[in-house]
Length: 432
Ligand SMILES: O=C(O)C1=C[C@@H](OP(=O)(O)O)[C@@H](O)[C@H](O)C1
Ligand SMILES: C=C(OP(=O)(O)O)C(=O)O
Image 1 (cartoon, rainbow, N blue to C red):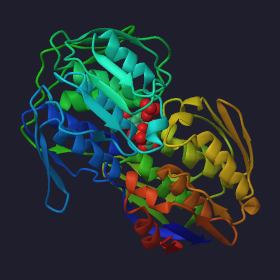
Image 2 (image 1 turned 180 degrees about the horizontal axis):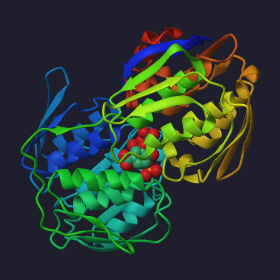
Image 3 (image 1 turned 90 degrees about the vertical axis):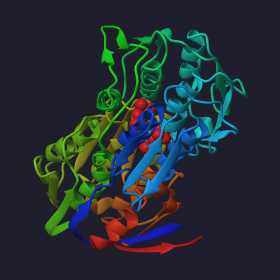
Image 4 (image 1 turned 90 degrees about the horizontal axis):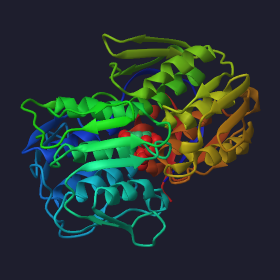
């Protein structure tokens, strides 16, 4: 599907979808338990991949009450060896958390994914499993999926880089809790995307599992059990909210855009509110009620460090393209290891729309100005975040902007274009 957008104003209320990161963790935590209920989950292509994995390991996930609840029958500590290959589709989170889980099984698990996922780095996590005396191989020997993992790992100490993906740490912490001796993680470098490990620690605690940061990295004691008696409620997703907030800031009408479901949580991406404020947006966040209101205002370029918040890069790049002056997005090398190289993809597509962009390995500089942006056909790079951010740019670019491959929003925000349409965006969906 391609989506054609015409310059428009957006106004009104919208609810953020539930958090993808919390949903993945809650599904697997429930899988590690003897059964738990996940309330208000995100049901999307990526989280369905994690549901499939829990079922492959011997659990069961029932989607009930119109997907407002997941009833998970867990595999209770140790996963069984899957009958078939696990397809993680487009989901990096799934592949990482499932790899560490597969290392606990008394037999081998084969993991694969789509072309994008099969090009993403898994090597440091495979090395970590080997340090724990497990077996973890890339079939092509290039540190990428397909992967073969097993080894009935019992715990131990690992040393791992922190600057490729925090998901390796999340995966080891989740699996480590049910090993005999636990896992001690030493970070070889500074940790990027650190708030995602905070999300993991929060979910572990919510399922009765203890784990903590140490001076050298993280530690999770072994022989723990996951459990939760009441329904685990997933909070709203700030990465998904960022597109709606950006839409309000660049194309909001009188009333502005009000995003519901914005209660504070461990999500680093709530930094989008601060980014908007610093750019000069008229934004306010009622944390008690969980609502963020934003109205259109003239934005000015700023410097944004995305070391902790890689998923905000496409959104901030678009805000920078609309803002007057220069926006420097720094500390962004790890944003190249996502569904696509997002630094390069945003540079290419924003230039197509008329912005002036300079790309360095670790810095993306956007010289913006609303009057520069002209509608064009832009590629979505088979990446939900590239698609959603370019759609926001399409609300302000003169004329018509066509975003190709728009159906990829299904990965994290399946209703994105419906929400944008209900806020007043002029858009037409074209099936290919
Ligand atoms: O753990 C998570 O839920 C995520 C961690 C981040 O990845 P990295 O840790 O690989 O940067 C983020 O980009 C991804 O969208 C979700
Ligand atoms: C990178 C992302 O997710 P994952 O790593 O799970 O594919 C994302 O949602 O932007």
